[in-house]
Image (cartoon, rainbow over all chains, first blue to last red; front, side, top):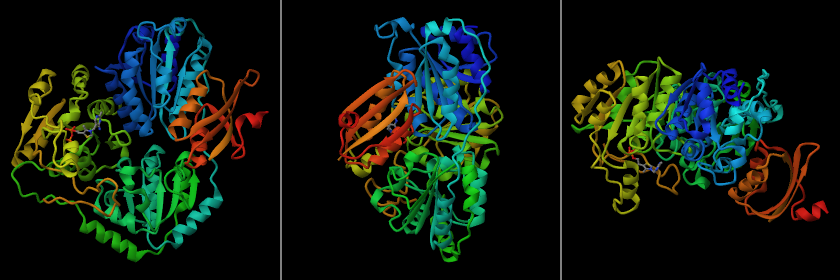
Amino acid sequence: MTGAELVLKVLQQHGIQHIFGYPGGAIMPIYDALYDSDVEHFLCRHEQGAAFSAIGYARSTGKVGVCMATSGPGATNLVTGLADAMMDSIPVVAITGQVFSGLIGTDAFQEMDVLGMSLSITKQSFLVQSLDELADILHQAFEVAQSGRPGPVLVDIPKDIQIGAVDFEPYPIAQKQYPLLETNAIAKARDLIGSAQKPLFYIGGGVGMADAIEEMQDLLNATQIPAISTLKALGTVPADYPYNLGLVGMHGNQAANHAVQECDLLICTGARFDDRVTGKLDSFAPNAKIIHLDIDPAEIHKLRQADVSILADFKQLLPELAVTPSISTWQQHAADLKTQYAWRYDFPGETIYAPKLLNLLSQRLPFDHAVSCDVGQHQMWVAQHMLFSSPRNHLSSGGAGTMGFGLPAAIGVQVARPDCTSVVVSGDGSFMMNVQELGTIKRFKLPVKIVLLDNQRLGMVKQWQELFFEERYSETNLSDNPDFVTLAKAFDIPALSINQADQIEDGIDQLINSKGPFLLHVQIDEKENVWPLVPPGKANNDMLEGEL
Amino acid sequence: MTHTIKLEASNRPEVMERILRVVRHRGFSLEEVLMKQCHTTNSTQITLTVSGERPISNLENQLNKLYDVAQLERAQTGASAVAMNA
Ligand SMILES: Cc1ncc(C[n+]2csc(CCOP(=O)(O)OP(=O)(O)O)c2C)c(N)n1
């Protein structure tokens, strides 16, 4: 068979049925092989869309997402997506075509040093040097993408290797290997948990990535320790857990941010002390001892010194930590904080209050749903006001904060989970960054539901200009937006525009009940801001609040 | 503060770039470097002397997690790469 055929064979060996991509000269042999293959290819309308769809596919299933592009500009268009996957530890394999080996380094047409570009935005990358190593490299790519802390891997394949003849040999797929549990550290951690007066779980995306949500929930049940969540962890702690204090950080719930400042033991579980979580690092959880649990040794002591650290697979580790401390005063305090700072929806105006709309939408969506969002104010409202039953159902570009993520990610979700109601919540700025993917929705008749919160502004930047730049609104006005309803219609997507509070119910009904895709265009007041907010450089209990 | 780190890495052509990128990005500057391909073991031996204010263990962790790095050890702080291999 040819190298190109081998690529598809290896994908199938790893259980890959769907890939996202865009063809071009240097990857034509693989596209030619695709023509007869059982692997289903989703033609996106921009390689960045393909990368984000692969991410959506991976995030919503825990499987590897695969995207493909041609050399040069095809590969550069993948870069933002791979960087996003790197920051959020998402297992993605990207395959790029490269010019003929002999032409590499001659500035040939569409020749770019993709391996060089990939170094800082992938977990690992390969330029295939010979046909002999092609299969092995592809298998390694899948293994590296999923093992330990997951991440994106890029394989750049010169055209001569795609057309060369090679034998296909079955390859034993490696079994996952876990580090041995460190019994000493576990004993120390148990002691700390058992003797703490005010312990707090600080839960990150690592729990979901390790497929250890059940183990985490069991641990919460056993310990009854209050818990705060990062953006990527939302959906891990059951919504009805009495000590679920919600999102921590810059736009976190006040309950979470106060609790973390008061705790005497912080059990960091698959999180990484990101600056959007900690605020001023020196004053984050100032009186707490730290237990740091992770699979990646490089996270330990990176930003905060740990008193006890354990490197382990969470599925094995978490059950070992079930100690029940006597902390009734602290539990009561956590429950009180939760009540005191519960989100409020008694907005008086007649216009549409986005948090209220999102909260209502969240309650109305069928059980099997996933929400992908873009970046900005709407992203924070999704995190604050929608409820999730698993982190696989909340797709948000966390580490990279990449506008344009939402629409293609939701396409990936819909391909991976055809029966799921795949929703995008986007802003008028972000939506336009990958708006071409409406073409992908049209082509594959994907029933993606789009909620476009239109404040005619780059809202989050505008909010910072208002608060920290003396209301000097430099380049954040989008009041000349296109007519989004007409735009949707051009792609055969029915759409409805609403701007009054009493239209919310009908809007949500139409969105959910439509058989195919739907765009709900929601016009909101540009003055609405995201609260609370921990100003940059401030401690987490130093929050600004708005008024309803 | 200068530190010397010895690494055994795969002998893929980009391995030096990959390692030096991490050194720079994680806040260290390269003072000296020695690199030798070992064709019998299919590996590359690298000795780096770097300087920087951040904890060296952070850099070691970042280097160690590179898929291409098989082994890493810290030689003594203060010594130079060239002297270590003389
Ligand atoms: C690719 C990219 N460019 C720029 C930014 C900076 N940025 C963060 S939020 C934001 C505004 C987003 O506006 P919109 O999508 O309309 O959402 P809103 O904040 O109004 O809800 C910008 C420009 C970014 N995060 N990503």
